[in-house]
Image (tube, rainbow, N blue to C red; front, side):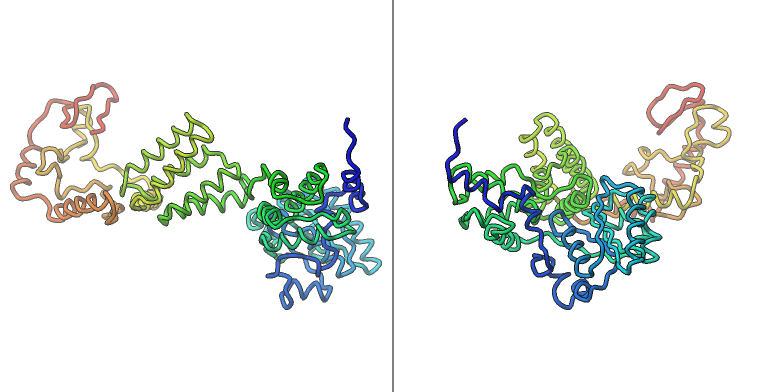
Length: 483
């Protein structure tokens, strides 16, 4: 094995690097003054800042993306109030661990000292586990601080939410990540300062943006870039080394979590809002984050049905074609088919008339229950059914002028009139609306007198048993005709 140069050895074994903890952990802020970001919570005069300055503890839930400072903030809050700090992870902790933490809190309470129980990833605790420490939060035995990347409204029980203040942390900006990287590069005690590394502007900007709002991630990439520079025997971190250190990283995306639902919501709303550029961006974001393209194909098809509808019926077929194209081509070629479908849907005329109409019809089904089908619409394949009046009075539309039985009513007799479908004046629906307006006008007029007379004559004519005005069907025991 080739021996490393003296410069490589000096970079690898500096005092700053004897601590084998990750750089992100070594650079964890020790005071509120060192904390970067979350100005909306920690600026002077803000409730959380004032509570920390005064040392007043209260239970809280810190909700924010990875690397936004939730754990560090919890530690600083406990330190400012001189409270005993117990840190647990919901991934590994059990109810037994909670009970042991409560026992410790009681011991410290007897000595006049408060206890902060910090539970990371609290959303992973089930209801029974969250209930376990609820009474001890209630009686003040401990102050609870939970950290979560998921929406507390869905993951935290209501009883705990009512006893804790929810603080929303934001992803760090690129400028804030630059500050963190510059401090880590210069810090001789905990950072990389002893290695006397330099970072050119392009490399710094690249790492700050590749950090994607996550301080832990950005510092981890800086550490890897520094190792690459050391391996090359250089004290200069180049843009190429920064790019290599940042390579393979994906943007924030949590399959099935808050990020997932936020982004699919943004994609759907961009399509609905006829913004092809935004729609294409959110599609690319989700694919970049690792979202299953089959899921996206299904949602795109739903958009075509729900938001374009009959204003452009081609949209649904195009979405289905894109879905099938992806299944045949796979990634990455098939993703372009999904992109084309999204673009078409975004610029297509919009209508949710069918979606709304179907919802109103379903609501009436719930409201009115199992109403009987009027006798005139029931098929009569047997003599008994004919004797009972099945099909009597039915007007065969093809025998009517314009193939429309003006004045006929097809809803259950007990229901009021309904106009569920109200076409929009856009795309094909504009023509559908004109046709429907004309038919509804004829409906209000009812049949002409000579049409009524002809209708009565047709009803008086006897037909062979089981005969139908609709398409011929096989007759027999239990046979039915849908027409």
